[in-house]
Length: 99
Image (cartoon, rainbow, N blue to C red):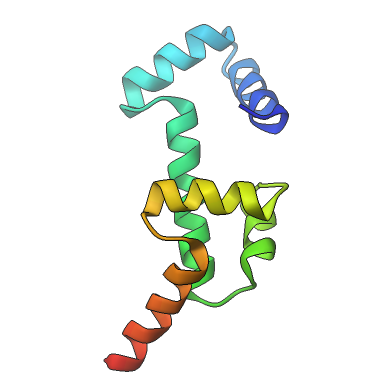
């Protein structure tokens, strides 16, 4: 967990007037996934949308979804989506031209 994510979770727990561990437990129970897992899925959904719409290169998309490094973002995106971001974007463009 990076410093931004840790601070975000601490802030969310504070807003909910819960300890971090109580927030984590309650969030997981209600949403069905851990806060970090939810945050990752949300960031990747945003990134996929930006890549589909060709709203910037990998470095810009990485920054817009909260990554300080394009390479860290690329590794996370590849693990989550199964394709590197550049290949994902290229496939999206190709699939639109086939329609």
